[in-house]
Amino acid sequence: MRGDDQQSGHLFSYLSPEQRVPADHPLRAIRRMTDEALRQLSPQFEAIYAATGRPSVPPEQLLRALLLQALYTVRSERQLVEQLEYNLLFRWFVGLAMDDAVWTPTTFTKNRDRLLAGDIARQFFEAVLTQARAQRVLSDEHFTVDGTLLDAWAGQKSFTRKDGTGRGPSDDDPGNPTVNFHGERRSNATHQSTTDPDSRLAKKAVGREAKLSYLGEVLIENRHGLVVDACVVAATGTGEREAATELLQALPTRPATVGGDKAYDTRAWVETARALDLTPHVAQAPRSAIDGRTTRHAGYVASQRHRKRIEEVFGWMKTIGGLRKLRHRGTAKVEWQFLFVAAVYNLVRLRTLTRAVA
Picture (cartoon, rainbow, N blue to C red):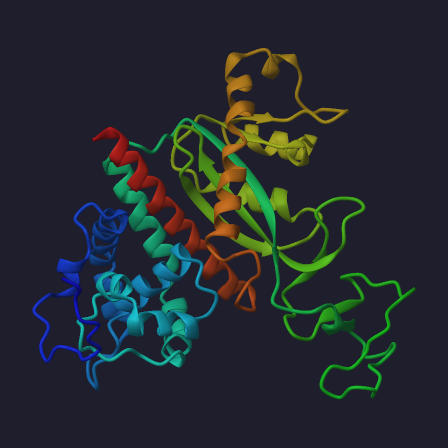
């Protein structure tokens, strides 16, 4: 018998979001690990919120929502709030009941500075790494370091001379004026973005277009490809090696090996790595700073083979994690986003690794 296409809703619902989500849904494992990391952050939350006054939106719910934004490539907080209104899976993951009101998009804006001041992204990243160590899936012997350019939230028209001279915009379109910088020599020494002063004009390779960018540096362990540290610096000619040195200095275990591409094959950087009790397994440039004493070993070959895993990290962070085009301006906010997305990547990897072990 054909059923009736009834449009009237039921007065009561007897099923909670928890009952609607399948027991084997991939997000369940990520939710368990996320909740454990957030429990470790409870003292930090107490420190950055006032002891009196009206209760705020729980920071745990805000971070779970931002985690979903990275997992499902939601472009903006406005779209994220829209999903929380009607997406049952999102409401379950964040911790909202069926009848709970959803916040406005400005809630994220107002709370971002508080979470930034408390260095919550770094704390969350470390809490996820703690779980990886407890599950014995984090190697401490072989690492790979690399950097990638992050497209800043600023246009080429904003890149003007620091002294205020030069060609100004035409008045043909007040809303989107035409700027002709053809033939003008522009560099980071003489020009700066008025939209995002911390960004720098940089290009990926010779012959490629130059864009206003930041440099995101990542250090991974080679065994499972987990991110063990990350940072964001200015996109300068030496920024990649300087950021790599900063990450390596924070490594708790020595000795170890560190792989890298040809950009790290300079005598100064190789000597710095060795001074840190690290063996540099970098790809050789035409006039290489390393020789057969390093490249003859099987470990060097293995490091070069596993080096591609860091490109998989960058691919996920940009394609899925929403870093193809940055949403924030300023080094501090960009690094917050970069670290948080790296933590989300680790959660996805941990879910896969623990499932394989089980």
